[in-house]
Image (cartoon, rainbow, N blue to C red; front, side, top):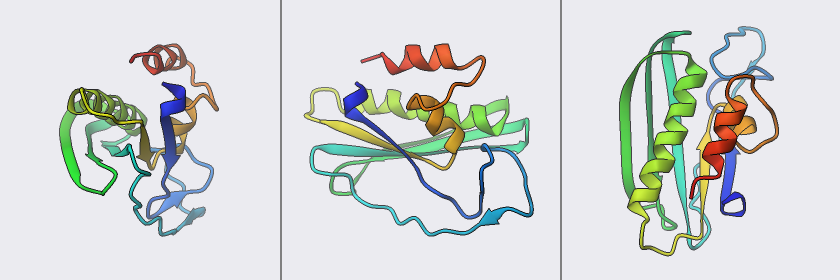
Length: 145
């Protein structure tokens, strides 16, 4: 699945430079515009976001899947209880991938692009960085097909 999965970090407004998701840093934010683009032919795109009111606090997660033409396939949102922003983002990614597998079963989807505004989650999922307590579970989840 590694060759079928491309994970992208989309910079949000604002984005904390060098900070993991859920951290607050007033003096180092920047604004960037990251326009949404259709995935390449045969692929689909999963856009996700997770957040918490407080960190930790009441959490929510959501996302949507679009096909190669940018057409909406399925979306989701959920209250996920008391979580950190990081855990909410991971929940959104995992739940989105589960939906993707259900909605693309029997179709010829060649790959998926996941877009998230949480650099820490993206780096952990694509194997660039480890995170104590999560890395073994993420590695296990990366192998599901």
